[in-house]
Length: 409
Image (cartoon, rainbow, N blue to C red; front, side):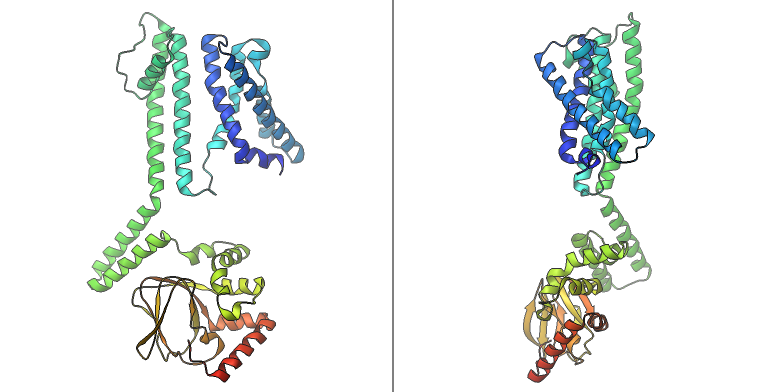
């Protein structure tokens, strides 16, 4: 794994994020109290130094192995400045503020990652806002401790929260005779207006995104409902249509599998189709010995189709043109209006259409909503043309069935 990928890996981002957070908390304390009073600070400083140094080394390696941009070289300079334990080496707490340059990495650590599910990304973004809010409150509390000579951190933290959120109860106020306290309070008040609006606005946006797909679904259903009313569609048909959209939402969250596949390049379309449909295809007896290339071709030609409750998939006596793979749902097979069998997830039906040009010998009806994949006879013959060994196998099976006069669908 190269240096750039290590820098982006979650295993490395975790200690880096912890080190950045510790530096953002400890350094303002150093400035307020002028010197370190706890032995723990010494070990935390060295932990931060080790992590920052390792991250700087990784960036240096990435600059050596690929063409670097000027901005990357600037960031490397920041990494070097942040890796130096200034107070430990020189005893000057003010220089430790250079280590806060490492906070530039935090937006990268806390950023939204499209490859993660939305139910992980949304909490991650909420945590990101809470994280920055905490740091702002902490920094301003440290500033108030310095400006007001307030010895108690909790009191300063309370003042910072009430002032930033524009509440300002008035129980802790600046001394009007001291310019520093008054000016500092005014600045924090102005920051509080923007800070409060920014947090509330972003949290609102995130919560809306969490339910964005549902909102789009409701909008589509409302439009459809208005159209059906305008066209005076009967209540029975209207009910079935709206139930169908409810099913799509509950089971697919409104996604159209066919359209999603169309947006991918051919190679990825084939890969995803194979991943989704391999198990269904392999359950058909005459596909048992099919190789990956053949299954890939078949998967790419399967068309998703949904049947609603009581839909007739095919009638007895119909000309056979397709076979079906059952992804989800229950299907009743009848012959001469008599129940033969009920099949469900992972089953297949109508395979005779691919082997022989004969009318359907039974009927198939959806007992509920059914997600099926359809393979047309024309597509199947196209596949046989490109896989001659498999074509011979199919012809052998077809001849055997003719000889035995098989009447199954």
